[in-house]
Length: 383
Ligand SMILES: [Zn+2]
Image 1 (spheres, protein in one colour):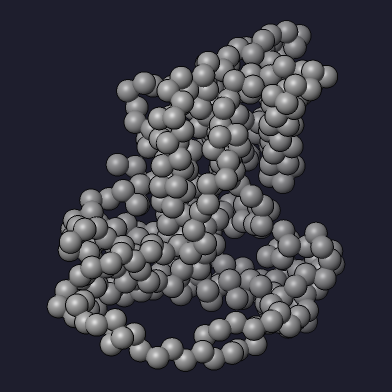
Image 2 (cartoon, helix red, strand yellow; image 1 turned 60 degrees about the vertical axis):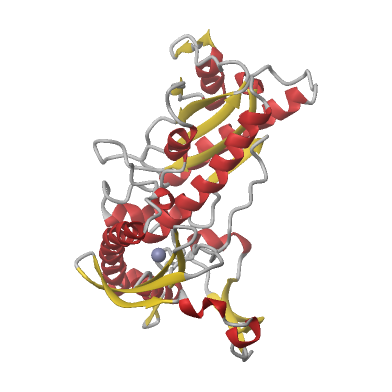
């Protein structure tokens, strides 16, 4: 099983421990990243009149606390595990623990949809398509280049399918629906950025990868289309394996945007500063509109359960701090089951960037160009 399949572990009681072990390794990586951010905070460019960049400071604290404890429930009647409570930071571009959870949710939601569409339309087949752009030093420029041209191709597809004949035909017209994600690793030599798109596409006919001669621009198929759009890139891959289960194909698409373990914390931090706030995941056609849960936790089930609470200890290990068998108290009448809830109103303040386009740069070092943040009263939240 690949590192992607957090949600598909063995659902027996042992499965809880496997999941905890895996989150332990992720938490260890999270702490390496936290240490790196801490070092950055000490650097002059993150200081502003003697104060730390407040956003980075807050991020540092929040990430440090992420997944410091976990509560799992094992539902004995269903024989299923649920991660019902934990303190996640939600920064899945920086934090491996959160990336694991997010990946598992996407995988579950989209595999269900893909299987449903394939059942409804048996003529469709799943294909894995990879679109890349030429490596480059400037991540923002390379990412924009990839995204802009991918969007153009999607637009071309939808216009053609609506019958707009002034748009050029595209291989994308063969796609009934697709789910895709951006991946932004460093190239193999670690020198340059290598952003690319992984896509799981449901097609009635195989999209033609084709080829192109970059010198003359002669060719056909997706390679030729992609080269004409980008002007510098033609590396395309289209493949399918009828033996491969859909869930495994989906895993290749739902990989993390960032290759945490194979790149330095400095590169991960750089990618976060450039890509934070951007959508690195999407879908179109018959796979559009799948709703992902907002929380990284799993919804509890009904019925008797055993609750395990784990606290992060050190060195990638969690310590089991309590195990409570809730099987016997489950049959309590419902009016005895819930304590009175006290709702307290606390004012919430958020940093709001003064300029509109600033959100991407909020975590960058403070320089003359960096916008200054101010506190803005932002309503109330219930505690
Ligand atoms: Zn986290």
